[in-house]
Image (tube, rainbow, N blue to C red; front, side, top):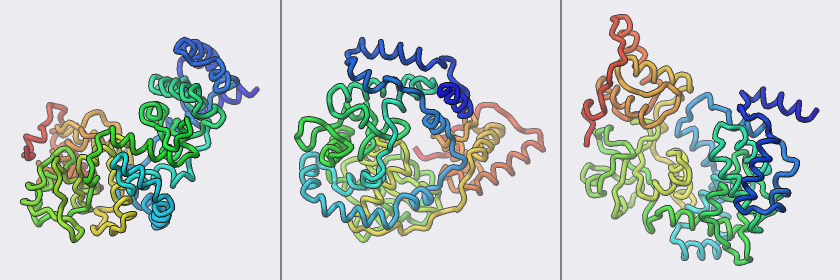
Length: 416
């Protein structure tokens, strides 16, 4: 009866994989795991009697309805309460943070910002059993290879004695502990910060913070350089320069008239920096540095990396954003698909219309903006959608829709 109910729930969550016999899949997996050296005791503790979790599959398949603006993302996460709590924890854990910073060179405010964003300073770490969640996702088939590897690593962590199978709790996707490490990240970077012989990223704050700092340093952190800072752009700034892949030496940005919003001057850094416009030309502008790329390795979201930088800035006593939010309103995923399809049909290659704002779509938007003398920021603002739809309608009325090769960003006059 329980299995029949479960299968109905899984069917409601979406199509079940072709390999829909979880018990058979699990039996084969156990054999493979045992052959890779994982003990029978760990396999029994983690996987005996386990059944797929329909809620995990539902969450994995859930798609957002709307794109989220930077201001909306920041407003939900960078709250006065989170800043205030972070400042208290900075003081309470001063000795620990001193030691971590001295060993790894990672600013304490960056570590505490990551801690605050990941789990609200350890208070929301996830309550789902990680082996069950990962087994569900590995069986489900949508990203089975990735989650199968994560499940094997989770079992190796249990086998090494760091945590029991019952106590290995985390998010629906298997992220664990104060800093939400995936099992593979744990195995590659987690360290025993408190010296007790095991790594407990759930209950031991030294283990969690030392592990996070170790990850950042190995990912390429550059000491004494920021992640990102808000800047003021000069009158007549060429918006085509505002993209993360366009890196210039600091001297070049200064020569163009870019200034820090803070009273202090732009920092002297050895690497190159970029200007990003997370909510288009009307919104805030940030200069991002090599450490921005490091945070992006932690989480591949520009909004996330900028929020880490801004929370860290405020934890250190800095100001809130000075710039206005930018154009209000967010496109729905369906509206972005409409924009992508329309761009394709007027001869600007936006790729497969999937509702995802990837580099190809952003480049297509920039090409369109350049061709139509709009600010070239690559941002899918509602006003840009309206402009594209108007152009598409005119082309359709004139019989000029096409899917021929599209102009490139360089053809539209992008700077090198």
